Image (cartoon, rainbow, N blue to C red; front, top):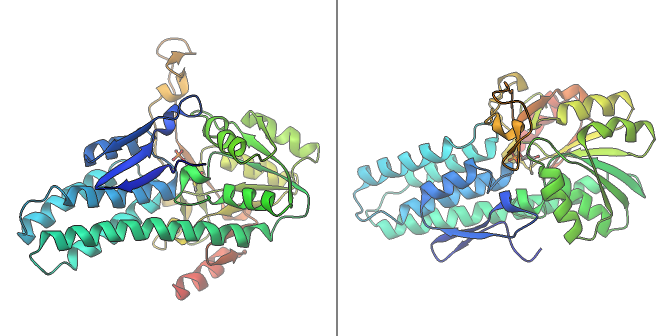
Length: 347
Ligand code: MRU
């Protein structure tokens, strides 16, 4: 894919409007942090790691509006930007992780030079972006080792180039497996309600020439029964200390049916997706989206007028349904409370 989903170019954030894919490749550019926040909220920029990267750039953008080097007012202004960006989406912890890194830069700014602060915030955002690229590469290398030769896998949602600063998490493993001749086929859940699988993962697989088949989410069990799936690979938006993992709604269903059929389910995520303060998945805040995203398909109502809708964007897969968690620091196996604690002690 020639176009990156998000780039910092001369004091502006340039991004692909993912709501328009795959029919149109619309590139937008902004120096307005409110516009960037809105792009995150409406899923033009989406996927846990990419949201974090975008938020880091958002703080850098806001700093470019500062006129004076008066520290208290500059800090207050930037904190209001952080609050705005933090309010966009609640589930992916990468967002809050990246904002915390920018807050640390702001707190450590001791000079009265506004240009110094601006440079530091831009550099930190660029670093977060570069680190995510590298984390994706490591995840792919660790993840392919879990897959059998000539495998056929299933994935849910989009965890690829469009969701990260690099090749992706779960989808990065899949493209890596294809590159080294280990993958035969990928099945893609369409991922209702917003079709991240049908629109975005299918688009990425097309671009990378990976043999792929789209299914409606409810077809996964049939495929598993037919013996056509060797492994399920998914990303995550937040992983608790006991290994419970929040990801796009429907992941939990997929994990249950994978367990029933004896198929391993691997969750792939960088350490920036781990919430070391959250003991279990029970406390992970789950975003509820506008019911229209379910009752309407591409702006056209498909239900009776006024139909009540429940639209959580994510669910939490309990750790006992997860075979391994692939991180940029290596593969974690159950019991996750132990393996995650060891990982935390090394960071
Ligand atoms: O609502 P979205 O499209 O932002 O949800 C994205 C997902 O659930 C992804 O699977 C997750 O962020 C992992 S992406 C590396």
